[in-house]
Image 1 (cartoon, helix red, strand yellow):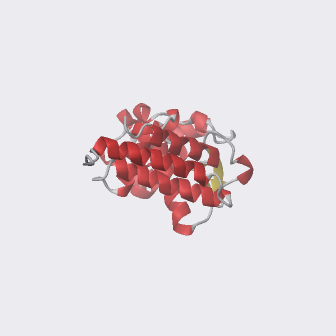
Image 2 (cartoon, rainbow, N blue to C red):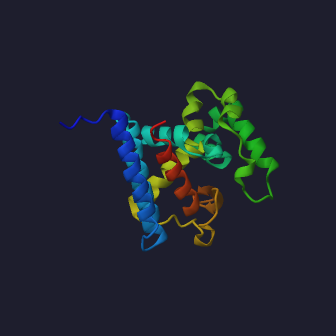
Image 3 (cartoon, rainbow, N blue to C red):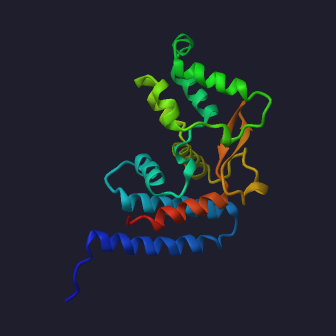
Length: 204
């Protein structure tokens, strides 16, 4: 008589299946198609690991708990400024320690090429944030920005206009100008590594 699979065994089997799909995705006809496949595989891994959570929460949680990515808790200063400017009035921003700090950091970088190396960690900025600013801070984390990047690709089935295909082999994200600001781009080589590392630690 066949014994039923336990949740741990089921997760192990799912991880093995998803790793095969990652390798199969490398044979996709284009970088866009491979990236779409990798994002779908990431979704499947997140659903297997955290089945009771909503889509965004489980994908971000998987990246933060399983990805081999030191920068996942970094915060994009450019995107944090953009979020704060959308969420709060000019008067509220003038009173915000967090917003003033972000502007000071960006001003110090003026004239330099935007780089992830200049972005701070979440824990560095968190003490400056009011309770109502924590949502903006969380949405500007690299893990959350990768989810937003995922949404953009899957919604339009096209690469963002800011993406430079000649930099697809880069192992880390990079900034590109778009819409009067700078946006993080997650190159294909990084996506391969992150998705594979998430799956390999799925059962941990």
